[in-house]
Length: 262
Ligand code: NAD
Image (cartoon, rainbow, N blue to C red; front, side, top):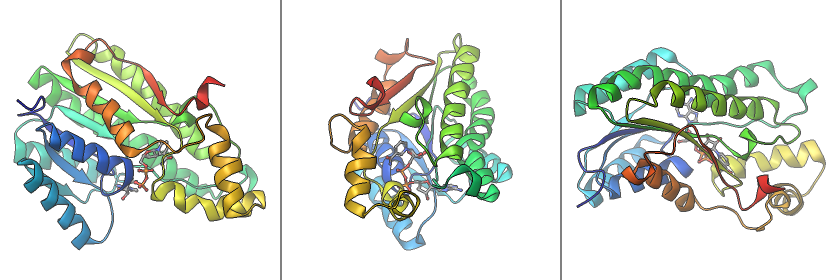
């Protein structure tokens, strides 16, 4: 039997990259899913139908903007309205901006803090009462190696990811006796659109070529010299969703090819 059969899940930022891998893995394990994020509507609809049909689960799409607390509230209400309960929440939506701190646009700072950090506070506060009703829950926050160490030119991102580590630990303590775990996964560099899109800005900020950015900036930090795959990140999330992982809570777990061991 599929281990997550009968469980209902939200994955924020799941139209692409790591979030899409989480959604596929949850569906493969039997969970119904609400996917969320931006992109061309026909692509999102094709993704939704493929998940639903390949894995014989329900799959809904929420267009909620994670920078808008009211839309986050509506997404959780939509989930409960359609599925009746909510047991798994994966906070994953994220954006990046690369600039020296003195040039960092304040509106980019605000957007990164809203999407990469505050959205998780809002999803969690709306989801927790439903997890308590179910008597079982799993909260997984996609943090980053940048929740543990910093890199220059990423002030907002590093601040948000360190923040999400603190939020994860606090929520884990509050929920420790409710059969609800909260953990953060900290990927190193994973080859997704988010990483690809920051290459031109990093080239500009550091005066490097594309190849130099990949080798000397991105993979320089990663002792394995290989990008982490989205499937490797999703596999850890599936373990955290299992009953075997019920004693793992408040943990900040790197999947980073050894980056933060240095
Ligand atoms: P991605 O760009 O492929 O995916 C980001 C997702 O978030 C997309 O679905 C996008 O539509 C969605 N999104 C962006 N803004 C949103 C908003 N306002 N409201 C709702 N959805 C929104 O990026 P990814 O690399 O898969 O990143 C996913 C998460 O993993 C992010 O939190 C990122 O910080 C984290 N992460 C990525 C890496 C990496 O190397 N790729 C490493 C560590 C952590």
